[in-house]
Image 1 (cartoon, rainbow, N blue to C red):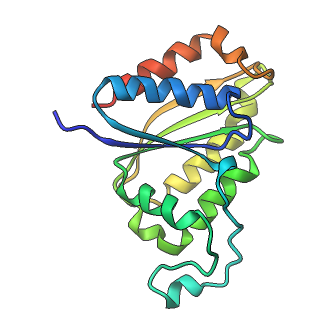
Image 2 (cartoon, one colour):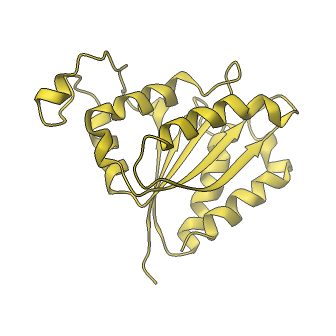
Length: 181
């Protein structure tokens, strides 16, 4: 059994926030199955916005912005599994996660053949409130050659940090991570 490289990209601005906790449980399960797992919290990294200058086209994939994104993008390219996570902000993904996705432009064609998992949380009780955020993640995956959607975790009705622990999706996150082999 070969272990997989699992990269979890947590968009949560709150360390220990609900989507971040689901990322941790997913990671715990994936580690127990013998995978190589890394979680990156976008809020703890310096990630500027893509300015569509296309410097990357003339520079062999080097971005004009000098920040943490080059390292994150290399990890995305090297990963077998990408986990994209965000709380819902006004029915969409948050700015931290959107900036990270947009900055993959520099080497976007090198991000290929990935298994995708999505983790989305929101205060709303209705799963419909997460549809646009899910569409954003799927939109990115649609640009990745060889992308395969493998799992979706939707945590609804959670606002205060830690509330997710009392929901069935908390255990599902662990089980989903554990299923990666």
